[in-house]
Structures are given as C-alpha cells and as structure tokens.
Length: 262
Ligand SMILES: Cc1cc2nc3c(=O)[nH]c(=O)nc-3n(C[C@H](O)[C@H](O)[C@H](O)COP(=O)(O)O)c2cc1C
Image 1 (cartoon, rainbow, N blue to C red):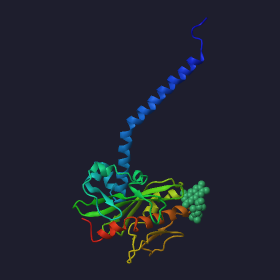
Image 2 (image 1 turned 45 degrees about the vertical axis):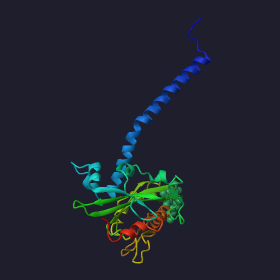
Image 3 (image 1 turned 90 degrees about the vertical axis):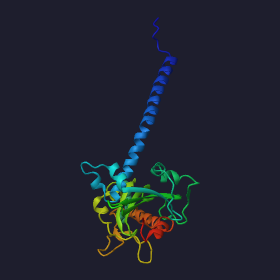
Image 4 (image 1 turned 135 degrees about the horizontal axis):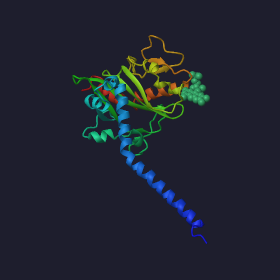
C-alpha cells in the first residue's frame, strides 16, 4: 500500500499551510508598505498645495523637486476653526500628520455643524492651513482645505487665496468619486482656469462664490460656469464653498486676518 495516499487531514493541513503563508505574506507587505504609503500620501498633499499656489510648474522644473519647493515656501499651521486663532506650539510632525478625516470621526475632536450645507455630517474643531511665501518672505497665497458632498461621496480639495483672503487663485480637488466626464470635470484644466481672480465675499462680507448653471456672465466677479451635465456635483461645490467660507468654516480666521497675515 502506498504511503502517499491522500487523506482529509493531509488536504486540510495543506490548505491551512497555504492560507498561513498567504496571510503572512499579506501582513508582511502591509507592514512593509505602510511607511511608503504614508510618504506618498504626504507627497500627494504637498503636490496639490503647490498646485493651489501656482508653484507646481516651478517645482517640476529640472533641478527642482516637490518636497524641496514645499519646504522652502510653504508653512503649515493649525487653526481653531471656532475662534479663528492659530494653535501654536505644535511640532512639524504633529501638523504634517493632522488628519481631518480621522478627526471628523472622533466625537471629542469634531462637532455636528449647525447648518451642514456641505453635507459633511461632522466638522473637525481644527484645520491645517498653508501659508505660502515668496522669495522675499511675504505671504502670496493662503491655501485652505475644503470638503463637501458631491453626487457620489465627499469631495476633498483646496482653495488657494491671495493675501487679501478674498481673491481666489485656485480651486483644486484632490480626492473625489464623481463620474469621469461629468462631476470629475472639476479636474479639467479649462474649468480650473475659470477661478483665478473671482471673489469669495461681496462688500457686505457674504459668501457669493458659486457655480452658475448655463454659464456665468463675463462680468460676474463671484461665479464660474457650472460643470455641464453635472448639476448635482456643481451644487455640491457651491455649497462646499458657502460652508467653508461661512461662520462654521474659515470666516472667523479670515475676519481676524483680513488686515494682513504675517
Ligand atoms: C451613471 C451616471 C453618472 C452620473 N454622474 C454624475 C456626476 O458625477 N455628477 C452629477 O452632477 N451628475 C451625474 N449624473 C447625472 C445626474 O444624475 C443628473 O442627471 C445631473 O446631475 C443633472 O445635471 P444637468 O441638469 O446638468 O444635466 C450621472 C448620471 C448617471 C446615469
């Protein structure tokens, strides 16, 4: 009689060993790749912030790079959204590792907005914003993160403002689940090019920046064309701007610093 005869025990043993090896491989690669994923996430964020401050072309010229350009010109600062005050005394690492998504799931670090225009459900108490200086050390751009509902899910992005904290330099989305060709046209360079020079607030301090279905008029200083065939995403972007530049967003910070940030 052959000793190689298959038995249920042998088969189950073999399956168990294969599963164990695969599980070990998956856990090993997850642990090994974690630092790389964190670094890539940070690099992606830095790239978007440079894009929002019109520094991406400079950063990608031969001889330059994203991280060096970011470190040279960008200062990340944490603010308390309710008071609009800077939170001082934090390390660079604490600020770099700030995660709005994690905070807004944490009951002790977030609140339900009173008027949840952006459909975010909870808003982190704090936010990290980015002061971008020119070679002479003056602030040229202030980049403010935004998040709000699109059609399918939350859409994350940044608004770059000039130092007057009212004139828009850029609206850059970084993470969304909208449909290519429809809502995902927020990434279209032609649409992004409509924003520079538009004003968030009118003279009375009301948030007026918006997307206009059917096309904004040439002399509209607040509006840009809505995304065609994507009214729901467009309305989401308008409401996101209304929320984040309103009382429950950056308006306490902006009102405090309208005279000029140092
Ligand atoms: C498969 C599919 C994907 C869609 N994706 C989007 C989208 O990303 N954003 C959006 O606003 N509307 C999207 N729509 C269309 C909406 O359902 C709705 O018709 C549209 O927002 C109306 O915009 P309009 O008035 O500009 O045509 C999608 C529709 C379908 C069938």
